[in-house]
Length: 337
Image 1 (cartoon, rainbow, N blue to C red):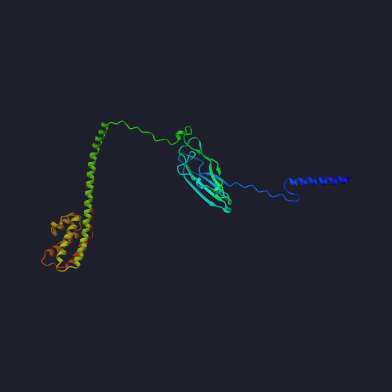
Image 2: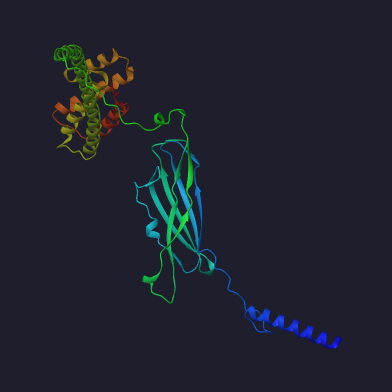
């Protein structure tokens, strides 16, 4: 009796186990089949602001970094925003999109929107949610059959800063005020013009006279400097002539030496020496702050030039010593006034 009851109990337990295994979809003695894990999100996005609060007219960057899984393609053309477009209360100044490839087929997308705001109303403004369109590639289907999907980046809040907290309207940029033209009074214009002419006419005449005096002084200074330069150029030419002189051209050399020495005396000591004799030139030089020995040397050189210039025979031999004496006299350049 006990043996029969125990056998019936074992048979009942075996039947219940078999039914449980069949309900789970497997036969007795078989392992449970592995289930397919759920797929992760196609992308991940992180938004960041370069400035959390701004003044009116400030420029800041709104950056979005998107991590894209393999086989996921983002429509980048839809993310480009033209200059001058708006994102909520903010104006877009520039859009930059960069892409970088990561290991295992992933990609990283960088979006940078440079924004500004010209109308700060309220305590803060919000950049609206950014919609990122994308599709998932399927090698078994053509591209035309890919479904367009969307990933939404949450909105971002930007605080507004102002000096007038109680009146937000006054903190914004306002239109240019309209200026009213003053009433026309023709007689007042004529009187003001006449008074201005009375003041400016004498001042203009004085300025013109001052300018003419300055111009004449500059021309005189420039002419004197040119004469000094020409004097030393002529003396150099005279030395070449004296070195190659003979009986035929010695007279011309003495004549040129006389002219150069007279010009030097006129520039240096303000003399009209061409109308004076050698002795009179010496007396005039001694009446000025001039070394007496230099006055005597000038007289001797002039006397030599006159003797050979107007003499019957112009000898070329004294020209060598005459050039040395003239070079000693001309060593000190005439000073400019």
